[in-house]
Length: 148
Image (cartoon, rainbow, N blue to C red; front, side, top):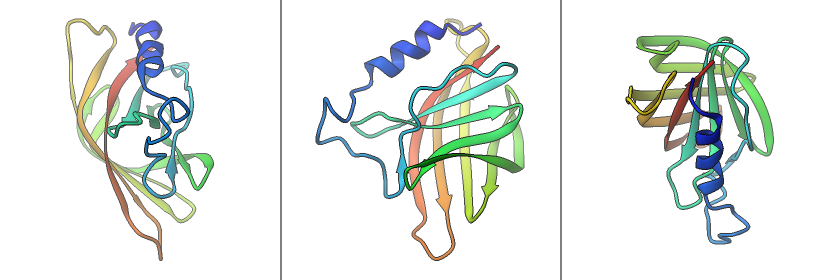
């Protein structure tokens, strides 16, 4: 089982916006989702922004298949609509989520490491947010997958 202490240490090590007033609060309407817990079952991918602020901007869960995002200051869960190809831990290489007028596409690659039990690292990923009549946002993200 991936150590919850590792997850908390990574989040604590990330500079906060208060400690780093020059940190990017997120691209456009996408913001931090705050501290998240491991799911009660299955796996979750915890994804941080790759900018200097290193904020937790998304949490994708395998069961139920959804992604949690903070858009325009509101944190919501968006259900999976399509996924392909399978990359393990209940996730696909490219997964699309929808809710309301939001379409979120997560494209990620993972690697299993010997020093992480019941999980993996997200070695490369992009998160794309599409909304009709608004700019499309594409941001690089990285993180960890943890499973219970």
